[in-house]
Amino acid sequence: MTRQRQPKSIHQEEALGKVFEPQLVRRLATYLKPYSWLVALSIVLLLITAGLEQLSPYLTKVAIDDHMATGDFKGLVGIVLLFIALYVALGLLRVAQAMVTGWVGERVIYDLRQEIFAHIQKQSLRFHDRNPVGRLVTRVTSDVQTLSEIFSSGVVVVFGDLFTLIGIVIAMFLLEWRMALVSIAVVPLMIAATFFYRTRLREAFREVRLKTASLNAFLQEHLSGVRIVQLFSIEKKTSERFANANDELREGHLKTVRLFSIFFPILELISALALALIVLRGGYLSLNGVISIGMVVAFIQYTERFFHPIRDLAEKWNIFQSGMASAERVFNLLDSKPAITDPEEPVHRDHLEGRVEFRDVRFSYDGEEEVLHGVDFTIEPGETVAIVGATGAGKSTIINLAGRFYDVTGGQVLMDGVDVRDWKRDQLLHHIAYVPQDIFLFSGTIRENITLGADFSDESVREAAKTVHADHFIERLPGGYEEPVTERGSTLSSGQRQLLSFARAIVRDPALLILDEATSSVDPETESLIQDAMQRLMKGRTSIIVAHRLSTIQRADKILVMHKGLLRESGTHKELLQQKGLYWKLFQVQYKRAA
Image (cartoon, rainbow, N blue to C red; front, top):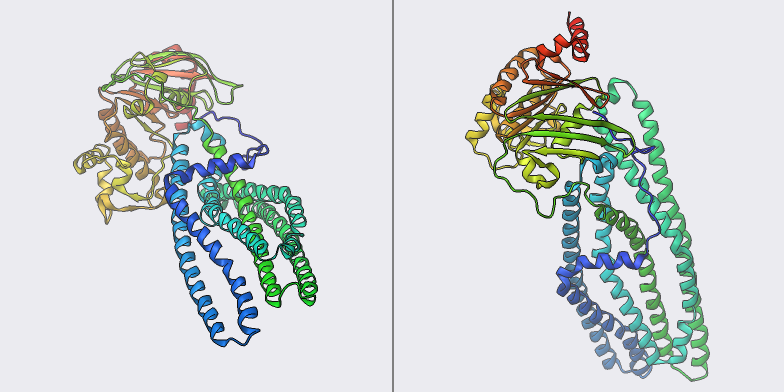
């Protein structure tokens, strides 16, 4: 099959421009709308918690100035009991708030993951040609998991930190405005430090996401192809390439570590400076009788508390920056429009006759190099047509266009006289069964791999398997039709997998059957069984066969000979041999090889 041209490295991520963070935040916030009342409840709990937390330093001041300084032990006991009640209430509030926030976060991530997976399934094959599986897996797993941290311990908790900061500032100004001004004097330094590291942290986390996706893509590809790696003894070279990718990811993480190893000590230094100013200014005012010792102690506690939410916000900034890097990737994926879309007013037909027509069809995978150059042919209902030609002639491209896996770049493909672009794609594919050369089986059971989740009766499944002679090996399995199938069907032979793909097609009773070199993986004995099943299957049904072995298509009603994207010959096996053209040459080459 002619493939689309790929970029230099399929593992390289697409380049993204600078993202305006508020736009991302607003878009992420839309996922909270279905749970707005729970978010509101969580914020109310945070407000109450932030308010109650400011009572502790004030109670400390009262304990020192009003009871300890006067020797009032009974009053001191009352303050201690208030302390206990306060922290019990705060504990219960924090538990309730954490449970509500966690539940909302997990629900949002569930919704987002469902949306991404559904969106990926809607994309055309052109999209999947350009995006390696590892990259898409990264989007659905690690990128979404990073966003989970934003929803479960980021956005709502940030509100809590902000409320706490506001509460502390209000409490300090109500208590003693001169001391409050000293406490917040270092805030400009902290803001300057935060903005200095902001851009650097954003780029560092973006780089980590890029390298993670690249590593996942490499792993998926090479683990899927581990048999080839071992057969050609390239384990050492593959390990070296993995080590390079792993090293790049490590360096990306180390960059974030270096930034935070500098950033947090700077925050601690600014915090220590603020505390020193409070002790100095508070001590001076206390020695001059302006404020009490309890007031100084209260402000020391408020100052320490003031920097706790700031440090917490800095840590949340870590999560936030990593989440923004993931969000821009996720939304870039969600913003990609499917290349194959249904028309606004699709044609609706309950029955398909199976007439296929190509009118001056032109096609290019990359928008530059054409692989079909004006192909014309018609397949009448019930006809069996074979397509032959050298590798790269355009055979597989024709069947991709017939099923509208891609859209033509010129001309028309018609099904029952209607352009395939005017059909609703799901309805069109409902009438088509496709048996590929490379069989893919899913983890599950034999029955599930035949039905693929559709609601077919046991009788229909068994009849389909019997038609293609798959029942012989299925009934010998310990579990029969409920026998577990491992990933990709690795415990089954290639012939058995091929037979299951035939049963998968037959059970759907399609109007159009497409076979892409469907007997290539079958031994001669099994092939004879399948040839018999194919004849019965194709009777009265439009069938398109892509074949390399000409011996398998000699009974076809018509044979189309493709050469370099052009339809060069058309006729029956006997007619084409008499013409002594391209088909005759292909037949002679294969005949000599067989001999």
